[in-house]
Amino acid sequence: MLEIEMTYEDAATRKITVAAPILIGRGTQCGLRIANWRVGRQHARLLHEASMIVLEDLGTLGGTLVNGQRVVRHSPVMPEDEILIGPCRLRVAWAQPGEGAGELANAATLPQPVTAQVPDAAAPAPLVVAALPSLQQRRRLHAALLGALDLRRRDVAGMSDAMLRAEAERLLTQIVADDGDLPPGADRVALCREVLDEAVGLGPLEPLLAAPGVTEIMVNRYDEIYIEREGRLWRHAGAFTSEQSVRWVIERIVTPLGRRIDESSPMVDARLPDGSRVHAIIPPVALKGASLTIRKFPQRRPGMPDLLAAGSLSEAMARFLALCVRMRKNLVVSGGTGSGKTTLLNILSNEIPDGERVVTIEDAAELRLNHEHLVALEARPANQEGRGRIDIRELVRNALRMRPDRIVVGECRGAEAFDMLTAMNTGHEGSLTTLHANSTRDALARLESMILMAGMDLPLAVVREHIAASIDIIVQQARLADGRRVVTSVAEVTGMESGRIQLQELFRHERWGGFIGCGAVPSFAQEWRDAAAGLDPAWFCGAGEMDNSGNAAPGYPAGLA
Image (cartoon, rainbow, N blue to C red; front, side):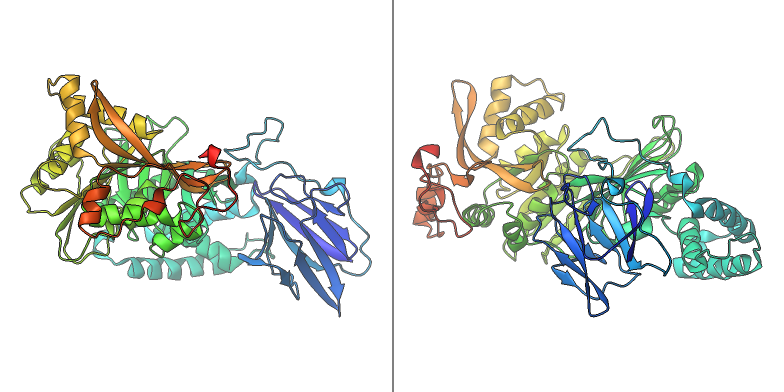
């Protein structure tokens, strides 16, 4: 007999006892049924072979993970192994003699997970994380540590993080050793680590920042944490001990950067030492309590091969965009939040030839360019007296005096768009930027509105001529329902006609056809041929679907292109 402990993502747990072999899946024929759309009908099975427990994945799309690694077959399964199947984490061990069979089949059916993509009104409300056994102990030990350490009276600024953590660890070890209220079975090592993280680190966010599969961390309130993994949102079982703990974490992030957050300035943008982007907002603006959003910076800088492997674009599109950067075409990357704009901008910026002077301008520094001749600028908010603010527009104007060959603006969101376009149109070809828009046509409309925000009394026709003369290529990004981030369209700005900016689509992504060349070559194709730039007209083939080699897939109906 096997004893299986199942933990759902809202921290609900269930223990059952079953006989091996056992089939796991969402199908009604499965002995262990997990009714969730991420679980295959026959997802995996547990076997008994040579006195060992063996786990086999049955070729499902979502896969089966053991200790964070995807497996096809894993043996032996140990009690400490953590098995992830859909929304459920399992631990499997031999049942103790004398234990009877527990609940099976429908009794093991789990509720649907809380996801942004597939809302389920019938799904039960997530359990309150404060019900976790260790939370009360953490609160008590955290208060005792603060009382012993008296952080508010310490010269924290004069101490390194290592010194502060070492002293806190020494005091906490003594507190735990003298504490007689801890239950006998409590994991004292894990409890000390959690309390230390919250007292001198980032609390329950520390393991999430270290987890490679987590791309975004969202703290709605102190006891409500969500994460993004593989493009989907999941409730995390961790929690802060109090609202004040979230405030302390925010302070630890923003103070070293010279930024502040208080009731007079309740919102702040910042970054972590590894480059991860941070946004925090506190009451009275945040009604539920202090809120924190962290966009994790990848541990390894992705390159164009990573985008190709992920199916974000075709090889023909990759070659064309890389060539556009090298041939000094002005590019705008547009898309929604979390669509991968900054990642693509990073990768395209690395195509800038060596020997050119590059100036990057950002609100909160995210770009990591592998370029030798680089100047990175970052905007600055106002101080407590409301002075000292330096916005992106001012940085763009100053960058023009720094003899740049290229200007890369992390994101245009206001009046700085006018200065950016002016730079593109006055000798700084090959510049790049991003903005938020739903399509390539919407990107042009957004630029029009942002230029008008600059306060200049310009006719709309003049604004459109300015845009048409400045931008060459618009790249549209999107995040699909399955979590994939793809380039949905690449369009060329061909000029003005009848008072309207004209667009020529070169590539697009179709749900039923993948990446498709639209059959039109860019207007500067002849110029590139004369310069021997290496432009291949086959890239823009409109006869069928493109594979990763940039060729048309055989047998694809030409009429769909």
